[in-house]
Image (cartoon, rainbow, N blue to C red; front, top):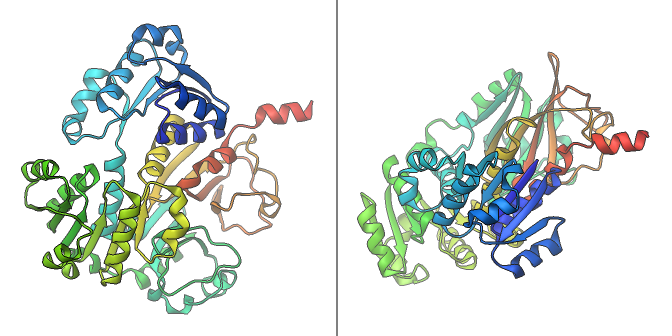
Length: 457
């Protein structure tokens, strides 16, 4: 696939890297020559130093020959206009990043008027994941994801006490025919390996045949416990804070937003119904005590600074708040997060990159996908002869640690794989992959047929 990305910022670079690993041809466009040089030094991409709002420049670079154009600049207006121009000039499909609530309120009109195929919103994407966690608790419908005869169940370990302190290698002795494919621990989703031990506070993602999984679900699912969310404090009144306050207020929760910028407070107060907007510094402990922080059912830290979000989340957790969620944009903080004990940390860039990659792929590789706590993805693929993992025992494959093959549909049979399992062409495979390492997944799924032909020649 031939893809053009407008904007050489963090999101543009992350999307480019994932698409390159999926064997696409990527051209990056930006008005900043230094940003393009930085990107090209990290990846094998073509760069074009132009103003993409100039139709002549788009024509000169042959935009009509591209399958996709993705706009990721910091300006909604620029993203919309550039995507519209590219579409009019003959680009196959266009995707625009749009963030402002004013635009989102009329998004269908904008898409129709400007002939934009897809719009992605990082702030709304992360908000949906936070809402699912707080309002529904289970990030899967009723805790279960099903495909054919295979189901994946999500539950807290203390609902099945025989699993507490159990080594992963002994899991099948307690629940035969099932496999742990993911663990949510201290706000971070991890892929389990042989040396891991299940802890009391873990959430497990367990895969197996549908009927046994549904029986297990009846034992471990906590009915109705998570529908009584009443009081939520959001620290930071940016776009994420706005969207989340709106959704939680409609859900019926009493929501307080703390925002430091006075002008932004006025905007929030005039655009949100039934939400208390407080002008102040969320790091001011006196203010937090006056606003009854300890009485909150949940706290979400969504300021514009990762460091503040982590510190505030840690403070809230230490005050005994049941659910604490932090917005964190830097992957380099992943190890810190796992040691903090907060309930969930979400990266809007990871979520948006995953969304864009799936839109570019369409249904050519991925039959279905669903996010898990905004950090991992359950995907279903059909094994093609060109894929590197076909025809070899799993034990012999150098699979990335960020991915696990959970189950296989082969005709009418369901296979829960082990090291000796060999994937065959035509198998339907269920995988779980961390979206922060989406490049590893794309490498695994890319078409290696040209390389195979070369080796055979």
